Image 1 (spheres, one colour):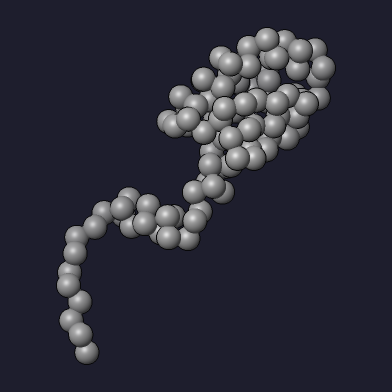
Image 2 (cartoon, helix red, strand yellow; image 1 turned 90 degrees about the vertical axis):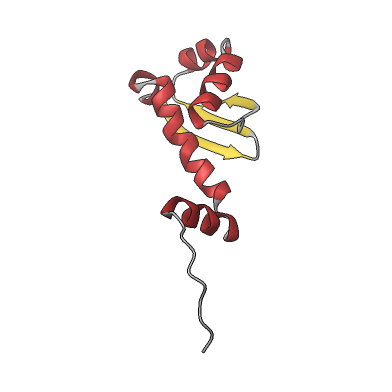
Length: 98
């Protein structure tokens, strides 16, 4: 039986390797975007948010209030910037409010 070479790895490194090998980063990004939306926009806006979907680099947000949708449409670039800062990477390039 071959002896294993003992390497010291942190749990963080092992998890990163596992995520990369199994191509799980896309799914984790989709979950992270939903959390970031709640953190950045706050509970009053989250209350009117019915669905959040990330497809490639486009974030689709479905809102139940047309008035809120109109107000948020004026600040799309700022929202994208704040979400990307919350996520720690440039994941979103376009925001579509429905």
